[in-house]
Length: 140
Image (cartoon, rainbow, N blue to C red; front, side, top):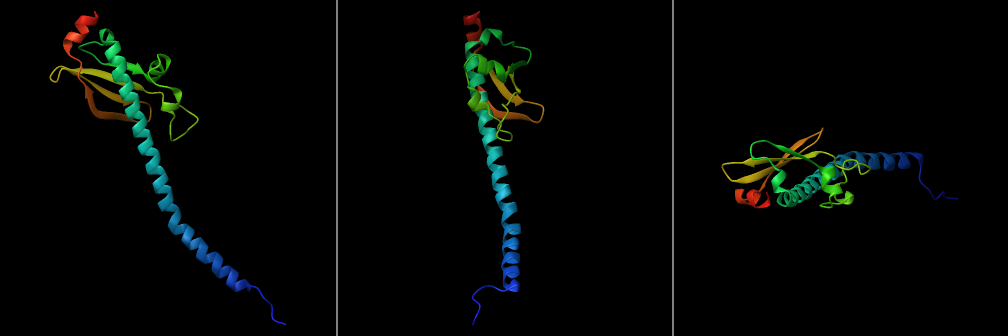
């Protein structure tokens, strides 16, 4: 009678081959996941900055010409410019991004510059919303 099955050596060889494949594939998959989270994080910061631009258009009279203005993300949520779902931290989905948008007026370009800052990172987006000086005078 012939036994139909695998020997112990064959099983160990298959497990070793699968372990080697896992060792090769795991870092690549981990890298892809990490890059996706970072891209999502930057996309969410872009959404926050767009909301801050809308807020600054509506509240131009509050913005100083000669100093920075720190706008908390919580203010954007409270005033309805963004929702809680739009600011979930992709690194830890249980928490919201809770940094500040730093708004600074650039006299040379006659525009406001926006950057996001929190405890972990300071990201300056290369975008600016032109708000003419006259718009501040009209709202005053």
